Image (tube, rainbow, N blue to C red):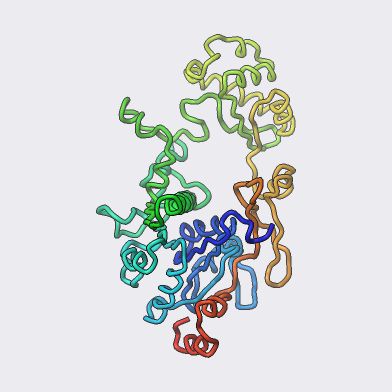
Length: 403
């Protein structure tokens, strides 16, 4: 597919973000054709360039995470503490559809890049602002990372086992959730601009609110019943059976048989027709009352069989079940491969790099990886040239520490 045929072709995005939430938001847009210009500090760049596992490159070492998080983006170095740097930023915003930032509230204003300034420069611009606690409220000015959003938003409290302190998920899920809300908000704001008169607006995403929005029935259950949802380990609270079980060969599996017909099929498949035909167990409410009994039965059956046999039996009975995958399981899995969720890209030294595919799958205009995360300032000269700066002026700006 040509670049011009992509769903977000022609959409121009300026990203002032660092690390996770802001950059992930713009990454999603870039994967579907938006031109994303990522502004980075000269000589330093986004700290994510040096996070986690590093790979040797021509300019030192670069994070393997960076290559994915910044794919399809253009890197422009700009000193936002220099007046000429801000002037260049203003020129970029004047041509942009979306500006994305994830600084603490007030930082963009101090730089001369707040909403009032940007909207005066470009009345149609959409500004996505991702922060710990949002742009307003008594906590707005406090620093907040994804871990804080997960804690305040309720996710950490319900994650783990009842007899142990709360635990985190294995990734920075709070940042990623906020990023997706930000991308969704940006597209809704663009749609509004197209249909209702051309005005831009602010998309204000707080990390704790992004997490809180995912918390299912937490609030109404507390309001009506005074019920506080607690940690329940691997069990799906109030929905039976859905749990993790360990096989004879030491593999961990998830079995979700919480549908009425599915539960009956599972019981028949494991030779427990008595439970399959028990009228009390024909509904979730009845099963939940006897959850301990049901889980003991499934635990015993799984423990007596190897993972392959358990999964084969579950599949034959049309019962949702899966091994809990490590990344080593994913890279050889036929479903991952068939869905093109594993791509091979090329590192700067020419070696192949396995990376995750693009989500979601669009039937006519799918997203893609056009290039991996760029080197620091790789697109500075090109971008300034498009703004009308001659080559000798670009040299001067670099010598003066502006770019």
